[in-house]
Amino acid sequence: MAQFSGTMAECFTHYNDQFRIKSDAVRKICETTGLKASTVFSWFFGKKPDAPSGLRAIVLRYFLEDAGYLVAELKKLKTKGPEAYQLGRFVYAKRITIEDIQKHVGYKNLSDVYNILHGRNGLVGARLIKARDLVRLTERYNYGAQKKPVTEISREHEEHEEEKKHKNGN
Image 1 (cartoon, helix red, strand yellow):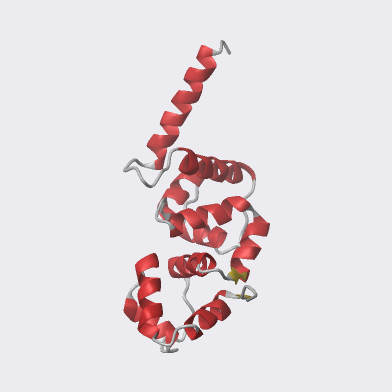
Image 2 (cartoon, one colour):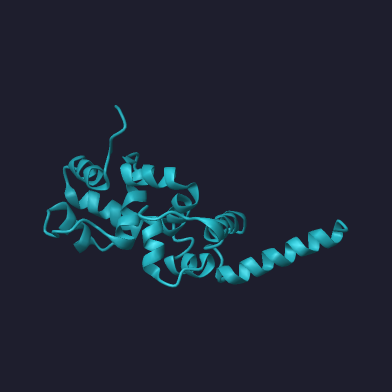
């Protein structure tokens, strides 16, 4: 069977159609994403007039991707830059928060972070470098599994790099 490709809404509808018993689909989404069952049921049965947005949309997109869907919004995000895509994946996996990204990358408003993770804006300049650093720190130090703020991990990383330079005589 070919992999289904479409927007988040199209993939969600297709996913929903695969389940004869809708509560099984809802349970699976809720267990994986942490979304409330009442919210997911409302989407399934069209009782919520708006599509998921904000953090819910981010979480649902990555859930659908993990379920084997080619989600158009994530494909677009990957082409804008792998850093934004990876940060979104970390948020989905609960390894970092939107607030962690805001602080580390240097945004004043959470809405700026949401715009990046939804692909409405791209990462550029110093913020792109900081986003790459956050991705690297999250991967390398398994940030999110620890109960340390990203600023502390960043400071520890800088100290480690300084020690290495000092050892090598640089």
